[in-house]
Image (cartoon, rainbow, N blue to C red):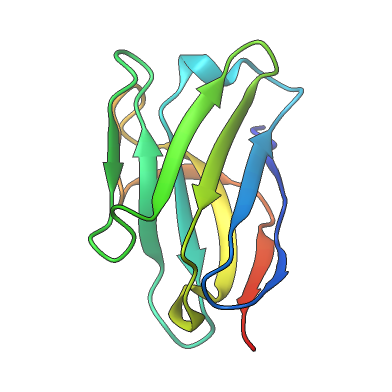
Length: 123
């Protein structure tokens, strides 16, 4: 069973930054494409970023492009999401997930995901 653990969420004022981490001790993350998606109660899940396993290519939702960055640290078996210029509308629970497209990046097809970490952007 895939077990992903997210961390790094918190409370931040608009314009602030956070870096989320996605780690696991159960398997090697660089064998999988990994995505971040966010969930707000009553709203549809939104894929925000992903990184492929084969060539390291990345993709971002239009709502976060230019503000968020995803990368891998294969030595530490971790995928990170740096979030800059945060807005109130970025408030959500953020989950990392392995891609349902296996090696390939996807913002909509998720195979397994963790419990998530809460990000709250507010004054």
